[in-house]
Amino acid sequence: MKKICIVTDNTCNLKDEELKRLEVRDVSLYVVRNDKYEKAKELNLEKFYEFIKTTPYIPQTSQPSVNDFEVVYREVLENYDEIISIHISEKLSGTCNSARLAATIVDPEKIHVVDTKLTSMGLGFMIRDLKDMINKGETDSKVLIDYSYSYYNKVNVFMTVGNLNYLHKGGRIGKAQAFMGGLLKVKPILYLKEGEIGPEKKVRGAQKLISELADVSLNYNGDLSHLAILHTGNFEIANEVVKEFENRGIDKSLIEIDYMDAVIGTHLGPDSVGVILRYN
Image 1 (cartoon, rainbow, N blue to C red):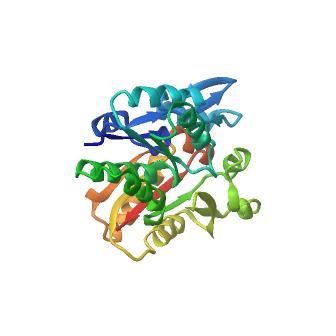
Image 2: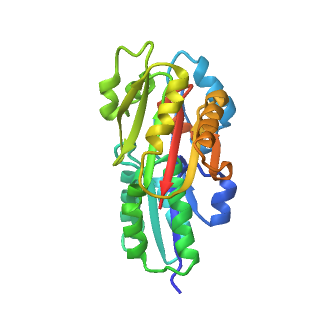
């Protein structure tokens, strides 16, 4: 039977223990501080988010190198027949480009690189569901690849940020540029749609912000199967969002709450919260 391995990147927000259990390999992006490149997956997130709250500059991020992918691909193909390499949206990172170049060098017939148009736990949910298909016996790589390309249609991603300057200066603000300026007393709700960040609405007041974030997140026809609430070090805001979803009748056992991956968190900045939902 054909053996297929999933390769991803650290923005999927899944911990090393889970990736190891799922037999999924990942390649790390980098955070750049004082000209020093650090693998994002190796950072202590509690300490890192304390750092970005107090540092006078905004750290940069960088995609993995072609060689980073080459090393992983060669190792994987020693034990697997094919690789499906699924990554952060191309509109947010050059990671897919590095992966494609490496695939061309290693074995373009056996390595399939997919721009998922997702990141964070949207990508994490996709990994879990793909592995479930493989574990149940799906070995047709075309079926798995087609599923990977369309998966973003099942996922809603919304976020609110403490300061839009982080997205602006990092070059990831996308269509949310429309919200720049005039936000001293107003907080933005942003979405990730087809791989790009855009503006959903402006909200006045912290409590209304949380209520509106739940409103837009749950405005979808379908059965909710996965829900993650991620934060950049502000537990108070994240817990308030969790309570709001519980008050809307969402079973607490369905809700995951965790730190946001360092790369995505760097671009969103302090006091940011993301809500990622997967619908059937």
